[in-house]
Amino acid sequence: MTTWYEDAFRPGSEIRGKWNGRVYVVERLLGAGSNGVVALVRRGTSRFALKAGRETVDHQSEINSLHALSLTATTFKHFLVEVDDMIVQDREVPFFVMRYIEGVRVSDYIHKHGQDWIYVIGSNLLKKLTELHRCGYVFGDLKIENMIVSKYGHVDLIDFGGMTSKGRAIKQLTEVYDRGFWKAGERVAEESYDLFSFAILMMKVLDVRDRFQNIQHSLPQNREVEQLYPILRDSRAAARIAPFLQRALNGHWQSSEEAYQYWKRLVADQKLTPSPLNFPWLKICFAASLLLFCATVYIYW
Ligand SMILES: Nc1ncnc2c1ncn2[C@@H]1O[C@H](COP(=O)(O)OP(=O)(O)O)[C@@H](O)[C@H]1O
Ligand SMILES: [Mg+2]
Image 1 (cartoon, protein in one colour):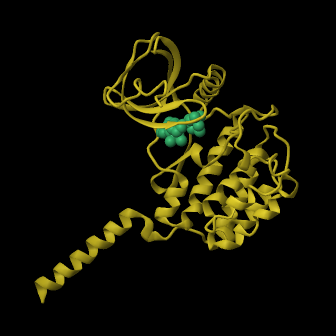
Image 2 (cartoon, helix red, strand yellow):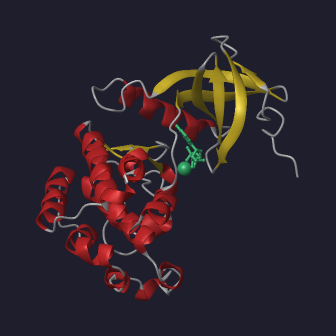
Image 3 (spheres, rainbow, N blue to C red):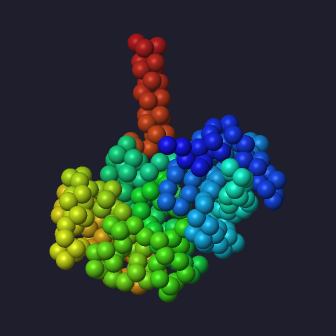
C-alpha cells in the first residue's frame, strides 16, 4: 500500500515551502505517527526535523504550542524553526520545521548503558517538566515515544501535540500513561497529570518481567495502580526510586518542582549514580593509562 507521503519523503527528495520558499532535502524518515510524518531534512549544512500533517486541527494546535514555547526563556527557546505548506499530489499539506534531536529511546539507552542511568534520566526529565509547567503548560502525552535521550542521559521532549494550558481538559493521551485509565484522577491539565505519566514511563522502562502486558489488559473494574507495585520490587533500580513513583501515582504533589526536589534528595541520600565505567571518556582514559603503563614496563624491563 502506498501512503500519501511516500514519494514526497523519499531520501533525496526536495521539499519546497510554498510561502517562504525554503528548500529542504530529505535524508530519511524518522517516524510516522498518529499526527503526521516526521523526516530528518537538510538545508545547507544544517539538519532539522520536519513534521507534516494532514490532520489540520491537531497540526495547527501543535504549531501554536511550539510557537508559544519557542518564545520563552527556557531550553525550548527557538525549538520551532519555521512553518509553511508543501504541495503533495496537488494538495496543500502544512508542515513545520524544528530542531533535530539526535539520540535514542529511553528504553534502548537503559538497555545499552544499564538501569542505574534511570536516576540521571529521571532527574533530567523532571527538570524539563518543571520548565514547561513554569510556562503554564502541561505536556499531556508523556510517554517513551515522545522523548529522546542523548549522551550522558540528556533528555529532550518531542511531540508537543498533547501540550495543554493548565486547567483545560487533556487533549491527547495514550491510555496506559493516563491517570483516568487507572481511575487515579481526572483528565485535567495539572502538573500532577504529567507526574503520573512520568511514573508510568519510569516503570515501563524498568519493567524487566514485562508485567505491563498483562496488567493493562485486565478488566477495567479491576484496574488500579496497586497492580503495578510488583514492578517496583523486580529490580534494584525500581526499588530505590519506588518511594517517588508511589507518591507520583497517588497524586501526592501539586507541583513538579516539589517532586523534583524530592527526587534529588532521594538520589543523593542513597548516593545513586550510574557506574563510572559507563562514561565512555573514562573507559578511554582507563585504556590509555593501561597502555602507557604496559609500554613503560616494556621499555624499562
Ligand atoms: N525534533 C525531533 N528530532 C528527532 N526526531 C524526532 C523529532 N520529532 C519527532 N521525531 C521522531 O519522529 C517520531 C514521530 O514524531 P511525533 O512528533 O511523536 O509524531 P506523532 O505526533 O505522530 O506521534 C518520534 O517518535 C521521533 O522518533
Ligand atoms: Mg508521538
